[in-house]
Image (cartoon, rainbow, N blue to C red):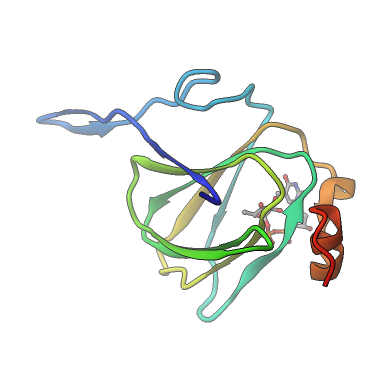
Length: 134
Ligand code: T46
């Protein structure tokens, strides 16, 4: 499997719902950074990179979007629209995000602080990094 699907406990009652995320519990690593993507314009595609070391959990906490994942051998396209589902990426995976609804918020929980040198932004370099030449 290219990614691990995480399902979070929903604490719901007659007031509504609450999901709590904790490091080493629902999130399988120490959390060093959280960022979120929102207000994405129509027909925009983001991503187009992989990470060398970074581990992340991606959760679409409002609206919907698609996540295209590629490990160099196979691709999978995931429709994200559930607040209690996380996509755990724990190795170099090429990713693209698209089909954002106007109310989409993609929450990203990361194992490291921001480091541009961890990005692989060239697809051929990505294949080289995972040991698969073009
Ligand atoms: C990823 C996908 C899912 C920062 O200054 N700090 C940060 O923590 C991040 C994530 C970004 N930035 C700056 C760098 C760029 O100037 O924000 C700008 C937009 O970042 P980027 O073009 O990398 O955004 P996406 O949507 O292509 O990718 C992001 C993450 O960067 C990436 O790690 O896995 O979301």
